[in-house]
Length: 163
Image 1 (cartoon, one colour):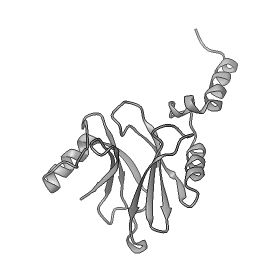
Image 2 (cartoon, rainbow, N blue to C red):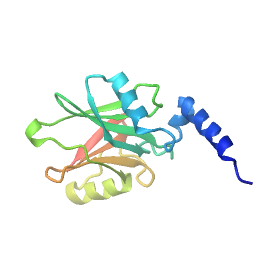
Image 3 (cartoon, helix red, strand yellow):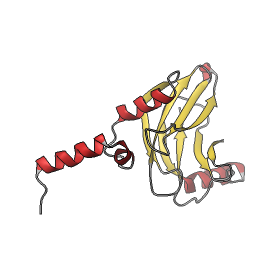
Image 4 (tube, rainbow, N blue to C red):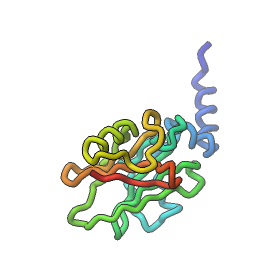
């Protein structure tokens, strides 16, 4: 049985109007909503719509919106773990302007980060969690070492690892 276009548009409009439903449906939330939410909570940060990704950093098979912005002190990463109507989890990364990590963001598996860290540093980043299901944000400009942002399950906050 096919759903009529009329009924489908009503369902879609209901999801967009109900932000708690939209937060749990990544394909419904549009980038403008993410950057507007970030700006509402952190107006001094210049948020980059091109960096919006969906990441399951808590290993719960529930991806959350993430966005990267620039402040006078460096980069700021916001992950909306509790939806766009609640303040995001934040991580401030300090970089000098002449060596700044650009806003290229990629989602990788925690398993890949654990493998990379073990090969290059001999240890897994503290609190990385369930490697097979958690996802990690990778910020990279191709010049300086990439920064890997993940949820630290020990400290219960965003953390990062850099080679």
